[in-house]
Length: 273
Image 1 (cartoon, rainbow, N blue to C red):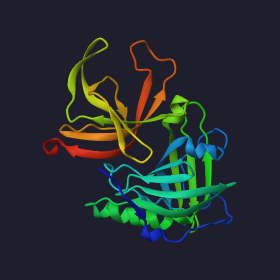
Image 2: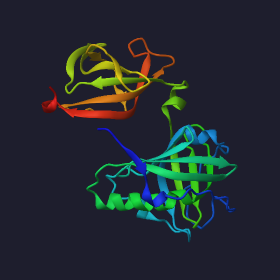
Image 3: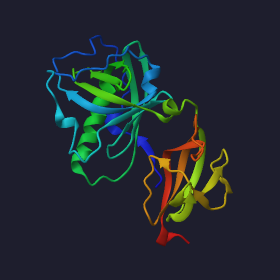
């Protein structure tokens, strides 16, 4: 599936807010926070931030930012001076900058995907309206097994709290190598370590700077898994992958970790020539 980006209409105007206030404003009954030190701006990019709690301007718990338990909560990813908002109908992308504890968001773009879930679409529109009004941020790092916490406060007093999960680069401690893999529609039996395994069938693809395909490799067994990718039988996919060099690798494990960055295209098997 190929995505197109367009300007998200609710976010036409650029917003630069420098209002003063405390990140923990309001009287909401927050869960106990981590016991670690405050994080700097780099800590924003070091984690995937999953929404855990939300509070109204009056400080009351606000469940309207969450849908059913089967729907994944909102996730924010900060990278390359952009923030991605995930787990809505579409993925939103907005430029951001920070100055101390203030955060400024530019106008956002969004993918254009059909959404048959009216509640999810309404939530997406609600997020689109409030996102550019974020005015302050605060990260509190955890100690030991504690998860870090990100708090975002908006100009109307609404407050969101997120728990952080390390990004792949934080987890593996190295910058990734970008690559493209085509994944075939069916797994095949293969020998992996001490037993039999059902391997993905992959081949490497390379593109020139102009986006034209310059190389297509041979099909081969893929003995690892791709983090973030769920294979669906009968569907082939071209994936953009971030490959990380692993540290202290066991003798029977792959020297690399493969993390899904984006599904570039998908093709049903019965439509393949």
